Image (cartoon, rainbow, N blue to C red; front, side, top):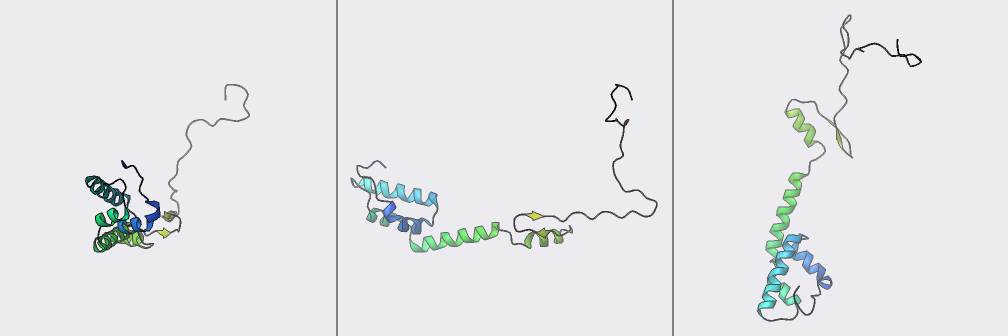
Length: 136
């Protein structure tokens, strides 16, 4: 900050956190407003009073906190939300794993007697590992 004396922000960290609700963008705008006010009155130091005058009100902070909490809740999926959603789409549900969401392994299709399972058949000539000559 372009002031002869640096502000004591660390000493007032709780107040800064409280009125910015921990959002660095809110904090930056607040500090810019407070600095502009201090410079306009010719101050050599940014004081707690400068910060308090430019701080958001408690009701503004409560509203921001409610909006942040609601937004985070919308982004967080509950354990069963994805499974319920997939079932509503007509897709198979999923098993919930604490570390990651995983779909259950697909069941092996049962073939009728006399029908083959779908699989790849080997193609080409088999190569013998013990062959020493170039011909097979």
